[in-house]
Image 1 (tube, chains in turn cyan, brown):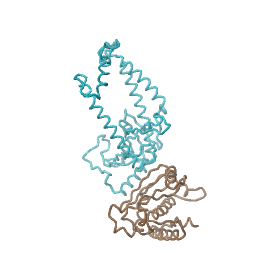
Image 2 (cartoon, chains in turn yellow, purple):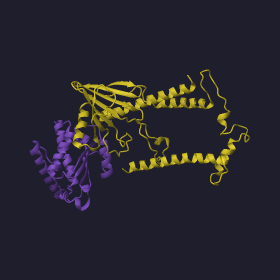
Image 3 (tube, rainbow over the protein chains, first blue to last red):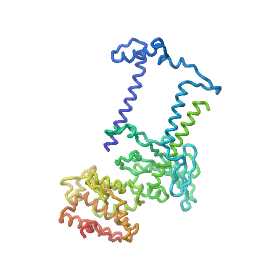
Length: 285
Length: 176
């Protein structure tokens, strides 16, 4: 509990630091034009002012730099700047690093006979259980919970303290019976304190049901007019029966763990693909 | 008032509704339905960590109790009789942490012929032992052990009568 609170405090500090920086920026700019009135900011404005003068050391000044680099064209019709070149070099290094830490180029298999269908960032796991069809859908976009900077232990390098990136997507379980026109749909998520950080303070279930609803079979959009049961105020006994219902269909804690592994690998794969596309786009290839 | 079950492990498949049904019955027999109770199911790794942190014993175990009350109110058996006097927000017994992987290993030991039914029976007996600790019962001295044994024996005999089970107190097994 204390740890969670300290996370909140740390997040608030980060937010306030970020917002004060944004507020400061225009104020400094205005002082570059007007005579500086405050002694505390004078050295800072002066050094920037000097750097922006072209006569100082003969080279291009910081503030004038972008106006002096002539655009280069390769015939693709796009702009190529020194910045683009540096950007591509950076991306190339980043891709190499990411590929180095990629566990495997192929996605991990889910146990229990699930078939997988991929459509961009969305994945579907499909399984038939005794005449019923069970489909799990999740999207890896925005599936990585925010991490908070923690002070490294004495003697520990800052890099070693970096938390592992884990994708914990919300996922929808759809159970369809052969004779029914409606599927029973469970909107599930990974509670925030159980994200594989392994700090031992977790008190929530590994995954939890947020909402339950009946939806017409074969329709991808959530029908808002269907009654939706929110589990926040649900009788615990009913909730436990629902968790057992899912476990009988292969959606249990082991499944939830394997889903995290699959989603993390897929997210990493898509991230590398995005970096490669970004590099090609900047290079105009 | 409410019993909250948390399954924090993946080592043992667990029927939450079955566990809840049995523990709800124990609560009713013990006359403590008005109290909130938390029940967390953990694996050996987490149980060992908790046991090391709170009892300085670096090994997994079957059950740990974290009482809401301490001091005079935790005198054996006193709390259950106070349920009508306490305000709503103080009707809390605390948490029982069950080492379900440890219990499964114990029940399914190679030399023991056992079934899933035995596993849930063992969970019931061990949960009751944990609840008795939340109610202030201890087994440090022979007198305390006798008092705790009598309490567990009474509750389980009622449980057996209502369910047709044949469960025996954990405290009794310790003494044998």
